[in-house]
Every structure is written in C-alpha cells, then in structure tokens.
Length: 306
Image 1 (cartoon, rainbow, N blue to C red):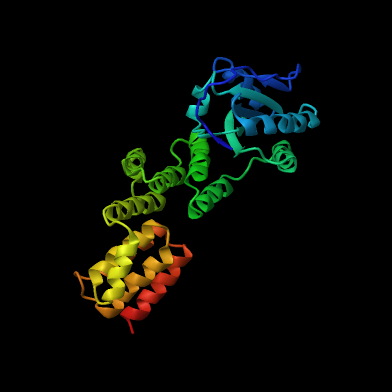
Image 2: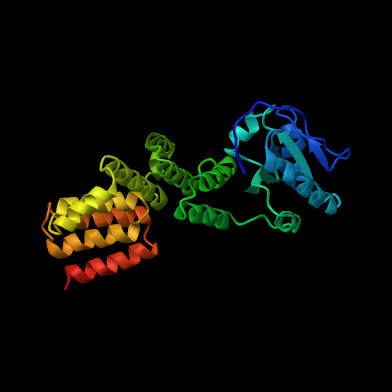
C-alpha cells in the first residue's frame, strides 16, 4: 500500500479491457458510471496511479475476479493523478484503495494489494446480496485504533462518513485517529462538527475526554524522565500523576491505570482527590465497556471502600 501522493512519472490511463464490466471513470462520469450504475448492481471503484507499484499488482487480480462474476459486479478504475477529487471526498490517503458502491452509497472497501483469495471473497460478499453490517465496519476501525493504526482507522471512518456524514461513532473515531496522529487541532475541528444537540452522545463524550487527556499530556515530555522521578521518590505523587497521563498518551493504559490507583491508595486527599478524578476521566475516554474501565472501576472501588 502506498501513500496517496502525486509523483512524477508516466501518466497514462488504465486499460479497461474492452468490455463494459471494467471501465475507466472520471470525475465527470463518476455519477453515471458508479452512483447510478450501483443501483442495479454493485460497482467497485479502484483508485490507482501509474506510479503505484501495488496498484499494478492488484489490477489484474481484481479484474480477473470481476470477470469471473459474469456481470454481477462492475469495476470502475479511477486514476487519482488525473482525477483526485472523488478520492479526496472519500478520504483516501493511500492506494490502491477499493470502494464498493451499492444503491448509490459506499458500503465496503479495502486498502492495499490483497491476495487473490481475499479479493474474491470480498466480491462474493457483495454479490451475495447482503451489505456489510455498519457495526462490524466500525468495530474494525476501533480495532485498528486500539492497535495504533491511525491511518487504517481513519480511512475506514472516512469511508463511513462519506455515506453517513453525521454518524457520531465515525466522527468520534476520526477525532481519536487525529489524536493518534498527534494532530490535536484537527481533532478539535472534527469535534466542532458534532451538532450541539448531540454533544453528550457517549461516543462523542469519550472522544472529547480523550482529546482533553491528549492536551494535558502534550506538555509533559518523555516518560523516561518521569519514571526516574517516581523510582527515586515513590511518594512524589505529582510525578506519578504526570507519568500516568504520559503513559496513557502512549497507549500504555494498564500502566497509567496502575499509577493513578497507587496515588489513590497512598493518599486519597492528594490534590483535592485529583487522582480519582483523573481516573474517572480516563474511564470516560476509554468507554464504559472497555475491559480496563471495568477492571479499573472495580479496583478503585476496592480501594475506596476497603
């Protein structure tokens, strides 16, 4: 998979193969070629560029798989060097990128030059008549975030938002992706897109809490220095508190949780109950069903009510 970035080199249109199952589409013909056509059968859009090596690997594979469906699905190839607008609208950040359209909307997709078997399975899911479950798509994006794959998660969330611009889970997911990119201003801009009436949605509230935590952690510096401070003086609660925030920013959440619980255990009144309040914010950012939230609440209760 190559980052979406125009480069110098040979500029040439893909050869569609001389039949109506595989065509080249443009910004001007996209509406007819893809949106309208997808109301009668699924249409795959393959975003590619002449300079993209993986695109050249995927091209023959996906064309073969499409032809094997004998008209049940159509492939539209779009050169993003010559026609970047649609790719930009869909949030494509790397190529090859394939989007599947059904009934005028993008419903599924994948990035990179997948093996033939996976490409065939992807197309067979489409021609089986059942559109992918949106919940499963969002779960896949959340899993990518948890694994630290901000780019992969952002592409999936952008794909969902192209179909449902006000999907709160996808908007919140994009906020989290930008936090992982360390682009906190863009994360703030994404939050601003949430309608005021829906600002307290759980997914939005969690993303807002995550952004606040990221801003807190941005000025703390490297964890190594804070770890040394805590090792030198275990009763240095401020250093331990700052270390917890820094660890959470690095996705070392279990360690962050342990340090804040340690402060509560050692001195509940420190900084006006600051460690417990910070734990509550972490739980909000992680979400009520996150395993660390569940275990963290249990451990906190055990300390408070011992």
